[in-house]
Length: 335
Figure 1: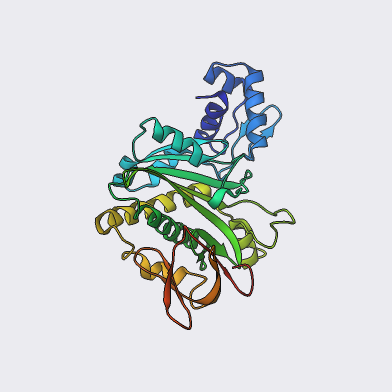
Figure 2: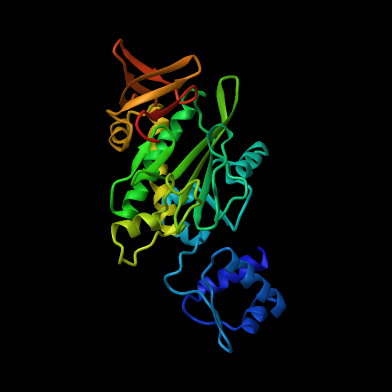
């Protein structure tokens, strides 16, 4: 464990109590300079460490701090036994890191969480804005079914994340087919599912979920397209003090996902979540334009079927739209 991680763990264990730099140095067996360097780095990452001369450093009781042990302790015992959680400050990308571990034989249930990504990716290679203040997490799965079922895991993750976000925000969240969560007409969460397969069978699946949590603003390019949990809560109650909680959100996402994934492994279709997914679906009963490589066409989105395909009604028929082949945008507006 790095000095930085050890300092964070020590301050977390002593929430609300000030610990001097010398006490931390003695406790961890490092120099005062190493403690100062670690605290400086933690603050740069957004960790709200308080410092008072002649008293030392402290984490306030209400600080939103990601800690693997604390998250695991919140999970139901069966879920906690099935996952192994690692929390890091930042990575190029949590999905990429887990894919490397999967290739090297890592078991199902590894969960990797970063508080920032330097090279986050979305679908079709698009970049995913991943600054400090967000929640970026991925889980490694080794399902025993064909590649046809694997893309449906994205829908499971979307419902799990939507449930968790609604519980945290207290107001409705919407899913933009196939892999985004929206709040107040703006994107608050993105999901990326990646797979390695052999002979028609999935060798592993990595599910990545990125949530905007504590950001207070976005660039001009993203300002009308993105929102964070904190910004949404502020819009609901301009004078309220409620903020997002990354630890709580992480716990709720994986608790919900574990239950859905267990049921999915028995049914191998989306019958368990289809009705709920369609209730969340922002595109449902809306006029959409399908951007098919063979030509654009329009219709009314009616929801997904048990395979996760979007059902679009045209004047001629009801068509199935595969997420891997097309993109769907509303005719009037971005969604």
